[in-house]
Length: 220
Image 1 (tube, rainbow, N blue to C red):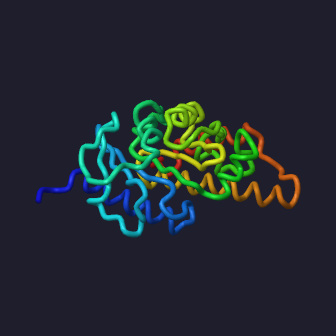
Image 2: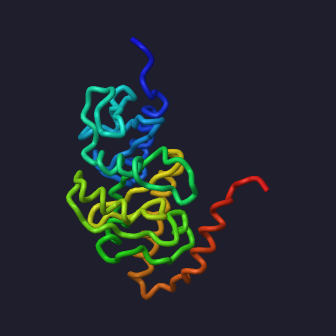
């Protein structure tokens, strides 16, 4: 048997799919993860228990959606993943190499209440100046992918109304970190809102932090 195609990406997709479950960002087989190498994408399969996934179970598809390797059917949300890779533009000019889609509870709840995530904490800037909510469309459809793409303009992620979140990055670690931060900010806002009227940060401060994050962790 030859070397597994996109072995590194397939192993990482398995690891982060299991991590989504462990961290409570999804339940069961909901949500999905993908990683890109060149013109190929390793993506979670449809309806398979993440705890049982092995790298060989991860389908590899081309950017047109055709299956290149693997015996399992790709996630039904493949159109969203491929739309990000083909059409989205990273605000920092980085290559988009990974996409994470969650059904996290607090972010999904917020998606039913507002059109943008309120700026309650500066970590919202990990997504961008704001985090928009894409209008609802049926899962797995081009309508949902198109709504998502609009909401992602100059952003690293967005909410999907009555559905969940999607984030991306130049690594799976970066995409996953953004999914975590988006869920945390939404949880924070819902908690504060339940207790009273939260004080929000001015948009100028969020914009300032967005600019600071461009060089965060970089050598002086």
